[in-house]
Amino acid sequence: MFKGKKCEICGAPATTYLFGRFLCGSAKCAEKARLLRGGPAGHKLRVISVGSKNPVKVKAVEMAMEKSIGSTLVVEVDANSGVSKQPIGFDETTEGAKNRAKYAFEAKSSLYGVGIEAGLVEIGRKYLDVHVCAIYDGLDYTIGTSQGFQVPTELVKEMKHGEECGVVAEKIYNIKDIGKKEGIIGYLTNGGINRLNLCESAVLMAMVPRLVSNKDIKF
Image (cartoon, rainbow, N blue to C red; front, side, top):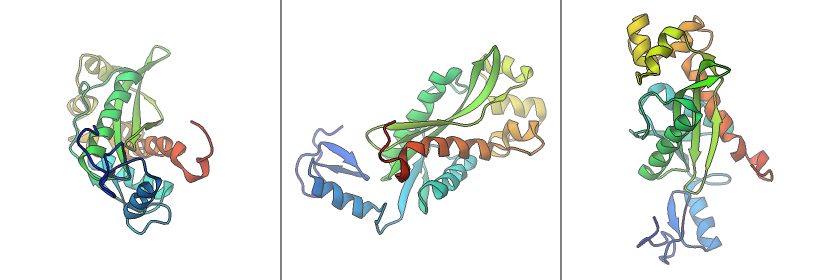
């Protein structure tokens, strides 16, 4: 990743990527990059890139970041998850979220890259829909999940054969673009909980290790 790259502050060979810039190992360069980027005591609006153009995911990130770190500029990136259209299990779902987060981070100069992936997870011989969020800062990921809810059997049968949840739900319940609106959870709860709520909670959980109040806690 760093081959041929130079520190964007002093011009020395780059050894890391922080605050949206290639940097050398100098603490002074890192501090200057932090100030240029913004952040605690920074003067510029912090940019968060989201690996999706789904309006529900983008709005969820905006809401979660406002609660976690304050004002940010959230930009969308058309990112491929790199996994199947309907991930099965926590491992594949998490991999999809991480791929989206990393792609978004590398595509846009941003403080964090965020990826959200919904997957079908088996728990106690039942199948639940769970959203996984991965947040990437150029060095490491933090992970969070939403609440999980049991998926109707008529959906599970087709999802296990690779059909995406939203596509199956559209066919069965005749709701167009359900995944970009209230989601299947909105239909099942009569609007009591919607997909925006699930995505936001996943992002909030992934932000826990990044909160300033937790800076001295090892995760």
